[in-house]
Image (cartoon, rainbow, N blue to C red):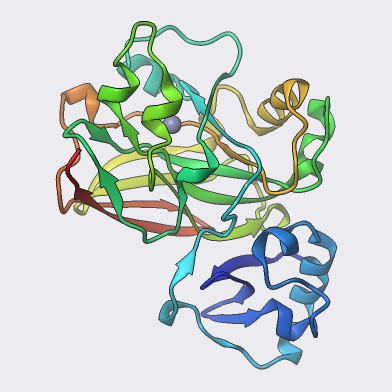
Length: 282
Ligand code: ZN
């Protein structure tokens, strides 16, 4: 049974329609209130989700503040240049293997968190985020989906000045500044989707549609990414992969985010992030 998981004020919850159910309560304490611990028990999430009609809801999801569904991943990866349209706008060469950087766990933030910008060269990148379930090492592509717990929406906010401050460029720091990795609003189990490898992704800035593509256009698809990363790193439950962004980012036109801008990022079947940009002193 498919499940939708959310982090309500630091506590694990299952979502059904507009209602949420506190996981520790409905499981009578069998499943942890801590999101990282409960995500390590996918069988319990599937089973409890199948019986939600037996419980009274803990509240309405739109009336509570959601935090990142995976607040403290052990590993969090970003993939660069993974849509051909974005490779073209960046005027870079198409990679032969996945181009990987760290989206450090400390930058992970909630679905409506503010983006704290320390420069006038910050940019948005709307992305599908993969959440690893059962981890592993040397995972073959053929069985990689079995290691995916679910999917979420992410923003790979990027300080382009920091990203290109050196030659060759270094991606990790400029993409891992505090608050630069909002995810959510929920984690939706992979079996919720008819075609988990073909989802519609859109990003708006102040209501203007800037990015619109489908995840079927990833150069390196999810099985390839999971398999490739697991050759180097033992993947753990809750690890994140920001899978890359399609065309339409700001820096191709020299247009960057300003104080007060509202960035909305949406994937059909998962939900929408809403992140207000705040310029802070450097
Ligand atoms: Zn990115």
